Length: 129
Image (cartoon, rainbow, N blue to C red; front, side, top):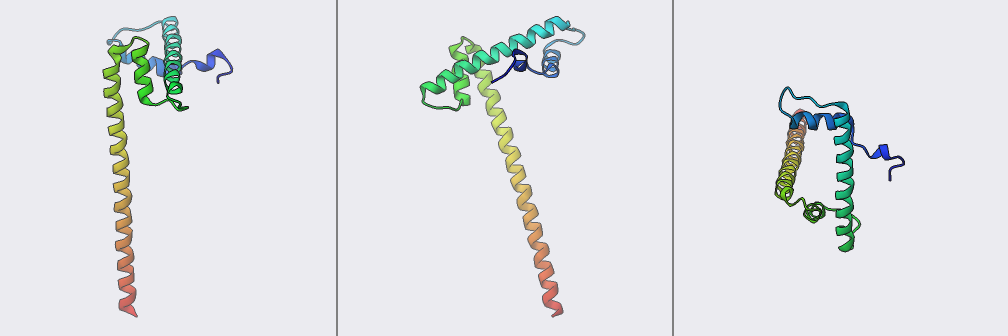
């Protein structure tokens, strides 16, 4: 657990990037407003995590899963965000699977190339003997 309350704050760079992406071009935000958004975000995350933890404990689990978080969103009256959250989660899982598949394919291709080189080397050695 965090030793100080400030340890729970999100990094300023992350908050600034999220705010800039949410605001139209040419609109800026004051430092105090950015701080307020950061604190509100941290409080929301703590509240959501606590709610998801209660759901996991009721299911006799120590690990919070994505379904616990989605259920917690509904429980804390943020139902309007459940569908977009599920969609984002599916996109994330698909992207991760594609990356894993690409890495696996790349490793397999490298292994196949190495085997061909070894076969070529073996063939050359056998020819010279």
